[in-house]
Image 1 (cartoon, one colour):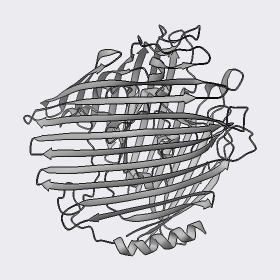
Image 2 (cartoon, rainbow, N blue to C red):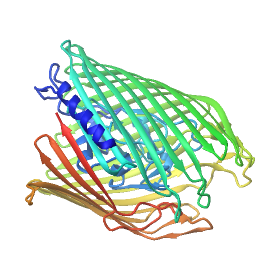
Image 3 (cartoon, rainbow, N blue to C red):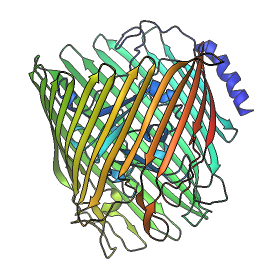
Image 4 (tube, rainbow, N blue to C red):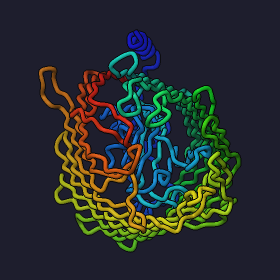
Amino acid sequence: MLFKVAFIFLFSISNLYAENLKNCEWDNREGAPCLTISKTTNASKYSELGVNKIVISKKEIDLINAIDINDVLKNIVGLDVFQSGPKGQSTSIFTRGSESNHTLVMINGIAINDQSVTDGLHDFGQDFIQNINMIEIYKGSNGAHFGPSAIAGAINFVTSIDYINNYSISGFSGKNNSLGANLTNITDNGWHLNFSGSSNISETGSAIADGSEYDGTENFQFNLKTEKWIEDNIKLRSLFYSRKTVTDYDGSATDEQGYVSDNRFNTAQAEISHISNKTENDLKFHYHGYDRQYENSGFLDEYYSESLVLKGESKNNFSKNLSFGYGSEYKYDWGSFENRGSYTASTKGHVKDLGIFANVGYKLNSNTIFSIYGRSDNHNTTGTNQTYKINFTKILKAIELNLTHSTGLRNPTLYELYGSDNFGINGNTNLSPEKSETNEFSLKYNIFKNLQFSSTAYRTKIFDQIESNSAYTRHENQLIDLNQEGLENEISFFGNNKKLSVYSVFSKSRKTNGQAQSRRPDLVYGLNYSIKKIPSLIGEINLNLNYKHTGKYVDYDGSKNSKQKSTDLLDLILTKDFLNNTFSLKINNFLNERYEKPATYSQDGRSLIFGFSRSF
């Protein structure tokens, strides 16, 4: 019934909003831009070439029929996704074997960290993808670009206007489905107005291994965006995004009764940009707030945080060989939480950070570029700290070489500074930030026009890690460092209507005392394959196949740290385009692998998801 009502409603409104969006080109003042372009913070025309960035477009997201962010990130080379159960459950991302709180998460280049989280990590399990137009993934220390917390890298969600009006329905039952709609209108006076919204319901099984109950999640999103050229070279943008996710959690690996979370997130952005032949100037105002509540056996745990950001940046093309940029960012964070019940903990406070950054890119000759990036952050508890990045790019016909040295830092969270719990752990306002140094070498070789090989070797050292001391009385900077090293290889073939990429990752994450880091597999390999227009009995269809082998790793199994088994996961997606309609069938975990990732938390077996979308 839910599918039928939604289908009738969306089909009827399609005729009300249908509009022929013509003149499709980037920065078109009157028509609809057909490209989403996002430029990296603290990078200019030539220094932009020294940025290691993976871009996942809206089209690529739709091709794999992604429902949440994890559906996309799990296929990215160098990222390991650990979700404590089915969709909606708590999820951590480990980038190149680093800590889960060393990956900075942003919306349109602004950090959206939750200050009421004890260790500063972002929960990717709450992020569903229907309102995201592009995902940018930066691997390696990126403090010089984005500021604190980008020790291992950064992930940026881009929410520009989607000019393809559409609605979509997918799922396989009333308790497992997704609905989405996107509507854009260009008014007579030049305003570009965009609305998108979605709902997601999932209930497939228990979060804990061998559980008997069903844990589910309900997610609702609303997104309103506007754009307008007020003069030939001045553009206004605004964004309002709201998300609510209600999820059933389990209390622990042995407690299935668990609790229910009500997780809400709201953000608003306003931006003004000035563009000329040689300069780009941008000013952003940003606000976001988290409101999280957990009902646990009659007790209510409450978590709140808010952030205000003002960010300005200028990018300049000084000459045909030199570009530079500079800017500043002020961020104010406030947060508090109260955890009640058998375990009690609380904190309350605020932090301020003022960042000043600049970059220079110099083109030594037609195939050699040298870039340097720097940033200084003044934090109200840790003081002034600098991060920098140096890149050398050399192009030799079909070969591109990159050498990079970069640094990063993570400031302590409010809990690490001011928090307390019933075990006696207290905050420490004398903490220093965690810091990192990374050396990276990458090679890209276009063997033939349609065959490309790429390889990246990296080595990272992280020091002054913040952990509780041996007496469990307060947080301290540890003397034991963390070393990471790895080799990422990928070979890609591009043919007519087809693409095949095969990859492997060899990595090692160890403390300097020899202890292996939990949930860090040493070996990962896989392939991504897509082909369009395969002849069949129902006409031409499209196929996408994603396979990933994750090797053994150490994890806590409820009693001790032990080796967890390797996994082989295969997802298969079939799509059929007919007029303006797309029909899809997605088979998740095609091999029906039964596994726990992390240990003691079960993952879904094979499942079928049917989908339908219509563009108008």
